[in-house]
Length: 376
Image (cartoon, rainbow, N blue to C red; front, side, top):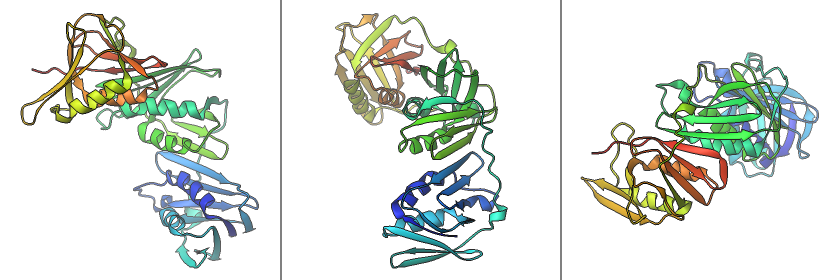
């Protein structure tokens, strides 16, 4: 096996496939990247217990002198390619288990792993796909994934629920304290599905999609999902279990509706939360929002150990409904506001001890729900 290629091209593809390498595994061969060198392209494969990634390199800068396949220590090889400054890299198999990497005046010899030990990566049998744009998938991840649970108390909540029915794709995430829901109408016709994708897998997919601008074919079976792009295949396991029915917790009647300039509200919340006390259970900063009789909204925090903060903000439109005073996590509102592309947002209050809903004027298919906090 022997080839040369531009260093930047090789590194960019390695960064994608690196996401499939495990941090810890009882199967040492999975620390390897499988390199398959053909006459006019290279195929890279990495896999762990959660995801599998396959990347195709067919760049014009690739010159193959000899074909072959190897299993090389993934992180060591990536670190070498990342550190060298050469424009072109030469990679050659010197002996059966020794790889030589030449980059200008640098030369590295890397001991290989046994390619015969590398397991066959079982990508999904290709059936009828759901077609989604890369921008749409990226948007869904940005607007929902942050609301998933961090801990494993309820594993099903550590993923985003994707449900397809009647040409509508619903994406829902909740950690049981807040919820994010995206509702999209699709052109594609597909069988109904109801799956949960792990949040870490979606994070990795989102980073790959930063460099992709194309339609994605999505293949689904009961325990895994494959996102097939032109030169990258990204497959992840699905979470087992039944996702909770969340529609019933979203209020439909709102006695108080207040509209804000999003940036003004976001900045006010940021400032007031500097001195806010932390909720014992969630350890998130708690602030209080009060609508006064003069229709000015007061955002405040009271911390007996540190001090107090208060800021007044004038709604961007006339307030609809009753006076209200409600406390909640500033972190939850902050993250919800950042998910919107809208310039204006409405906070829709169902009551002082009921969840409230955040919507945006330019994001009709997105809503966020936040549970209030009881304070003395």
